[in-house]
Image 1 (cartoon, helix red, strand yellow):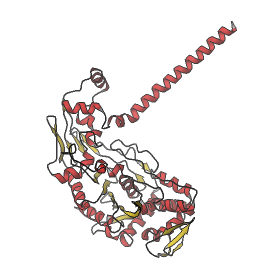
Image 2 (cartoon, helix red, strand yellow; image 1 turned 90 degrees about the horizontal axis):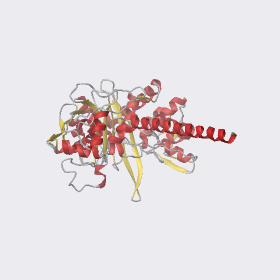
Image 3 (tube, rainbow, N blue to C red; image 1 turned 90 degrees about the vertical axis):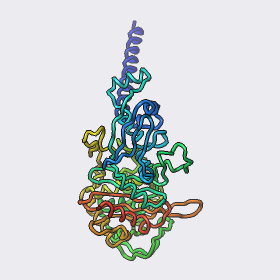
Image 4 (tube, helix red, strand yellow; image 1 turned 180 degrees about the vertical axis):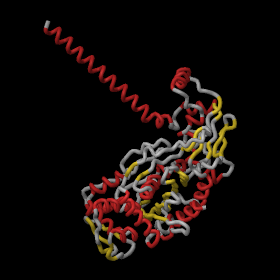
Length: 456
C-alpha cells in the first residue's frame, strides 16, 4: 500500500514537472516570437518573401523627400533611373534576389502586403497561398541626393560614410563602397565584398576615435593625468609611438593632439576592467536589437598584459567597430550622453505618421561628462588634428582616427573621422576610408564637405 502511494506521488510529481517544463517552453517560444519574430522574418532566405514577389505588385520605396528609389511594374522591380543614386543607396534599398539585407527584405511585410493580422497569415500559411494585389508604399529616412553626393565624394575609395540626425536617430545616409547596381546585381560579376554593407557589417579597428571612450572614462573617474610625451614609450614591453613629441600635456591637450603615449599610459592608470566597462556603456560587446537595421556587434577586449591594455585604450589591440556604431558614438556625445536608436523607416502607406521613436535610446554618459568630451572634440577641429573638418557657418566637433592593420605583411592605416555639428544642425557622422592613411588627411576633409552640404 505504501509502495502504491509512493508510486502515485512520484507520478504526480513527474507529471507536474513535465507540465511545468511544457509551460516554460511555450512561454519561451512566445517570448522569442515576440522579441525576434521580425528579425527571423526579415531574412533574405525567407521563402514567403520570394513567393510574394511573384504574385504581388510590390509597394514603392521613397526617400525622405519623395524620390522613388524602387517600385514595381507588374512583377518587375524597377529602380531609380540615375545609376549613381542606385549605387549610392544600394545597400540601404537592397535587392529582390536575397543577396543583401536592405529595405527590400527588412520591410517586405509592408511592401508585399504580408503584415496582415495573425488569423489571415495563418490561413495563408496553412493553404500555401500568398495574398495577391498591391503592397504598401514605404518612406525611408535617407536622403537620396545626400547619399549621391557622398558617393561621388568618396570617389571610388573603399569604405563607408554614415550620417545621422543625433536627436531622432534618423539615418540620412549610409553609403558603402564597394557597392552594386540593383538593376543588374543578379548578372554582374562582383567582387566578393561588394554585397557587404560596410556601414553595418564592416568591423574595423577604431584607432584614435576610441579615445572618446577612454577620455570619458577618465572624466568619470576624475582622472586628469599630466604626462610628458617624448614621441614614444615602452609599456609592458610593448613600444607605443606618436607622430611627434607632444611635450607635457593634460587630458584635454592630449585628446586635441591625439597623443598615443599619453592615452596608453592613461589606459593603464584606469585599468583594463574600467576601460571594458566604459566601452560596454557605449555598447561594445553587445548585440544590437534594432527594429530597422541589422548592425553587427563591436568588439572590445582586454588582457592582463599592461601593453595590451595600453593598445586597447587607443583603439588597437583587438578593438573592432562598424561605421554605424562609430556614428552613434559621436551622436552620443552630441546628444548629451544619450545614444539614439538608428531608424530607417519613416512612414508606411502614405499615412503621414512617423514610424520612429526614441524608445531604445540608451543613457551612456552623464550630461556633464558628455559636455566635457564635446568641448574637447570642438578643440580638435579648432586647433588639433581635425582642423580640416572645420567649416564656416557652423561649429563642428570631431575626432580623427588612424587605425593600423596588417595586410600581406605590410602595416597600413584606415582613415577615420567622427563628429557632429552644433544643435541648430543636429547631424552626426562617421567617415571611414580603408587603407587610405591619416584620418586628418583623408576622412576629415570629406566630413567637412558633407557638413557644408548639410548646411545647404
